[in-house]
Length: 197
Image 1 (spheres, rainbow, N blue to C red):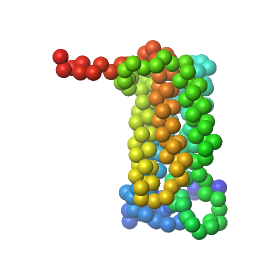
Image 2: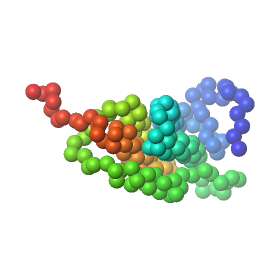
Image 3: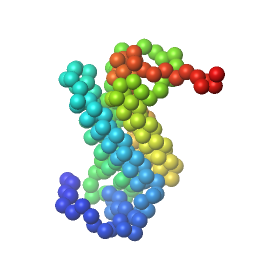
Image 4: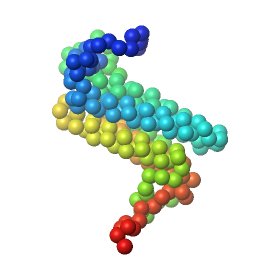
């Protein structure tokens, strides 16, 4: 159980941070970089949720709000996963890890929402509705988190599900952005070379 009763501890004043297993690493090393970007992604999704919270309680908005909240909870699980190095030594506790079940839930959501969209014949620009634009922003942060976790996986052993989860999540955020653009009707299409004429 998490218990926070003191906000500052001064233990990080030397540029290090504590991992879940009690070890300390530099704050700019790959592991804190990875879970830090996941935290940034979670915060960006908080903006999406807030934007949807200001909409009418239409079924689609309500469903997506519930989905976003669930993803935010998953992202805390992912942060815990990434902040806990994989150890060959038996631990006193079972580390929290992203599971295939969480990935399957994301894939089912992609399939559900993508089937109501027409295929794209062009890339789309971030834009349209406010909520869709914020989802595009979250999508790009998800891709950056994926790159950070990929880099970490080259340096240390990680739970491979964490990388797969981020890959699927960025796809879901793209699909949801189109759903919130009137199922793609308000997507802003890229016109190659538009300003070269």
